[in-house]
Image (tube, rainbow, N blue to C red; front, side):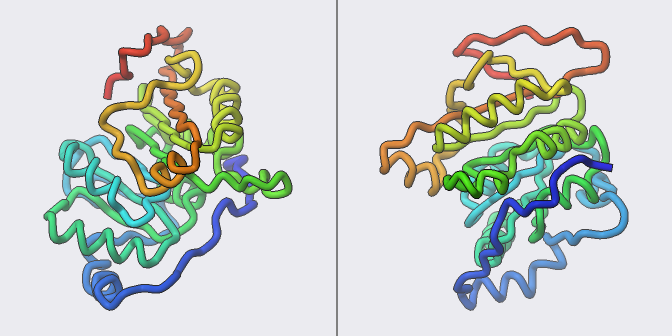
Length: 241
C-alpha cells in the first residue's frame, strides 16, 4: 500500500471545449484513451510491443507531449492530465501525426501510479511545470510530496529517471530536498540539472520566463539493488536514456 497522501494536488479543469476537441474525445478515445481499472496495465498489450514506457504527468494542451513523442519513437508514452480540452487537442494531434505510441488518461496521476503502474515498470516519469500552489496554506496540495516521490521511485525501473521542471524557485528547492531524501533515487547532478536542450519550452515556461522567473530542472535516477550510488555528472553531461 502506497504512503502517498490522499490530498488532491489538482483542480479539474474542464474549461471551454471546442467542437473539434469534443469530436476528438468522442471518436479517438477508444484508440488512444485509457481508463483506471482494478488491475495494473499490461503495457506490452496496451502498446502492442515491448518498449520502455514514459509517464508524463500534466500535458496541458499536449504540445510538449507531441514534440517529445515524435522525437523518441522507441519509447511509449502515457500522458496524464485532468484538462478535458487539452486531452481533446492532444488526441486530435496524435491522430493527425500518426503517433500510435502515445496513450492518454484523464484522471488523478497519483491514482494512475498506484493502480495502473506495476513496480519497476517505467523508464521515466516527467512532471513539467506542475501547479506550484504558491500560497502557504496550499503547500500541502503540491504533487511532489515525499509520499508521491517515493511512489514514483517504486514505479521506476532501475536506472529509470524522474524529471521535474518548474519556474517556481521555492517549489524547485522543495523538490530537490525531497528527491535527495528519497533512498531509492540518486540525483547525479548534486543540485539542479542544466536545462536539457531537448526539452521543449512549454506554454507555462514561457509565462514564467516573461514574469522573470528562473526555471529549474531536477533529474534523479532509480538506484539498482545493491548500488552504493552513481557518479555525479558535470554540467555538460546527461543521464543515459
